[in-house]
Image (tube, rainbow, N blue to C red; front, top):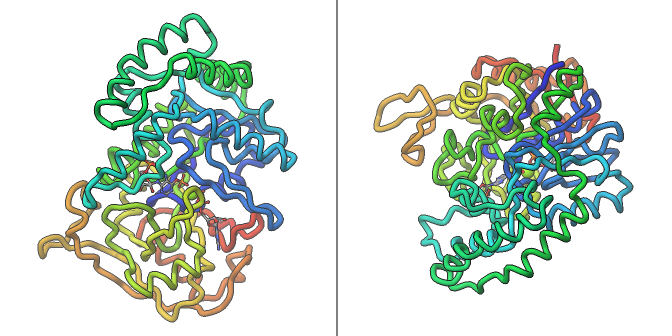
Length: 424
Ligand code: GDP
Ligand code: IMO
Ligand code: MG
């Protein structure tokens, strides 16, 4: 059976979790493959809201197994807290989550360094991270100075490894960041405590996933962040420190590319981004505040106001290309009901010349070229059939589909599971 992939086509917060929740009813295993507690994935069921950070959003269904893949950076404190919160809401979590033995453990000092770097960055270098230590943990992974979940299963080896890692790390903490050194014994106890609580869930998920796929199980790969935040294909350096895109889904889960079937790209009917970095379709000033208010655009993880802009065709085409998206989901179209006319960025101009692609450099200098669409001015919240949408809304959706030259398979008209239109 196939593995399908849900990937963000913009700068995160596209409504991925709503779609993952919708698709999870026909799925056996849901896998997070990159990122960490920087993600904030909101699912609304029967008017109740749940926000996931590390636990895959498909946990709500009783029959699903959830996997934290090898590409994730797992913060034990956040993870245990999230599990406890979900369990108080009546969800089974700990017996349904598997943790890759190769995923890296995000330690408290990663967060401290992230905070120190953001505080010390000059305004033009500040990334506006979530301060969850994500980049610092991935840096240690690449430097081959990280702790992996599998290390927690061998106590003696863990002690040796930790002493070696902290010898290097403590110099960095003290000399470069003026922070307190870490006591190896305390860190050892902290990790053993996590191993006591979750050790049984730590397995070789690469073997597990591929053999379950071979047996016919249905797998859904859950992307965090989005294409614009990809370390390679996003607006570097204003990006996260992983690959949310299709290549990252394979590398971060170990699922063989032969199993991959649909790549489902999620995009809002407009655009948002949190943190610093170029945003060609951004709406500045009061007009931006209006859209933020209409869309409730405040970060699910940090509560920060999201910057708002219009749908950007060039960006979505970039996401389609990079990810191999074969079907798009258009979310939050209900938010646009307020507008008489709806601008869409249909192209870019750079130094007086038309640019046919989303550039990897100099995005801050492109001039967006707009087209305007007539708004429908009718409340469409919760409508779940295309035929019931106002004609102008139908034609807006069809126009976007033509502009990005990719099928829009699902349209979302509200946060709840039922507020969903499946297109023919
Ligand atoms: P994710 O990180 O991509 O999963 O997205 P977030 O959860 O951070 O942000 C999306 C927000 O939009 C959440 O509050 C969702 O409940 C909400 N949402 C999702 N789809 C729709 C929709 O079609 N209409 C409206 N009004 N809200 C939606
Ligand atoms: P979901 O999965 C939106 C942004 C941060 C910052 C940049 C780097 O909910 O879509 P990091 O803490 O990752 O080092 O920050 O990435 N960012 C997100 N923006 N949604 C997210 O996740 C994000 N995760 C990180 O705001 O600009
Ligand atoms: Mg989010």
